[in-house]
Length: 192
Image (cartoon, rainbow, N blue to C red; front, side, top):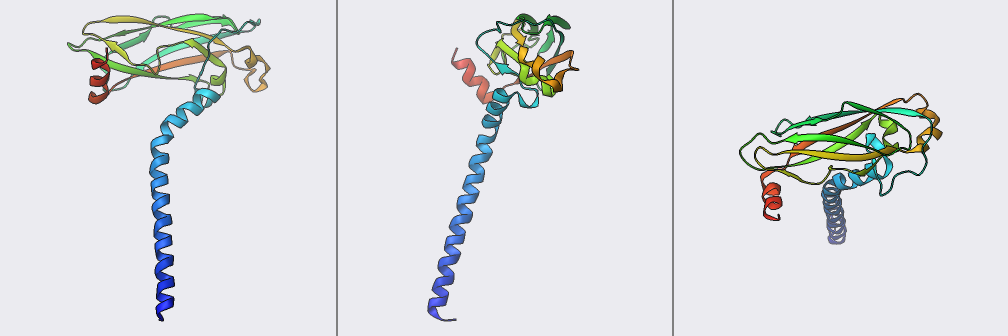
């Protein structure tokens, strides 16, 4: 093999190595960005049963009832007791309503938690709109503390125009509380 052919091959190998390094760095970057981008996507589109966060209630109420059921779960590491105060509510689509969940910390130390949520059926999630909610913000419960947390919501009247949802008469709003890891907990507790 001539020297020029060897130099050309070395240059091509370096270019390929550099390209592969860029691809690897890009994939690591996408892995770190995937969760926040997915959460943003779900909040905006209602994909996967994720509800929409809105500032104001609907100014239109239609004569179609929908029953909303409430479910509460805790991750296996979360020591709290967590439950909905009401099992279900029936409301007119477009009407603002409020539901309550209760959390209790039975431990002897402060516990910081964060809730995630979804709506089923998933195809109706984009029409479930929350005005005020305790989800995605840290909740601190002191030892033995019991709190009631409200969710102010309505079902968007645009749901009535979606022919794929004509048969939907019931929705379920489900929350799951997770305990924050030790580092996040220390950060939240030091900032109060």
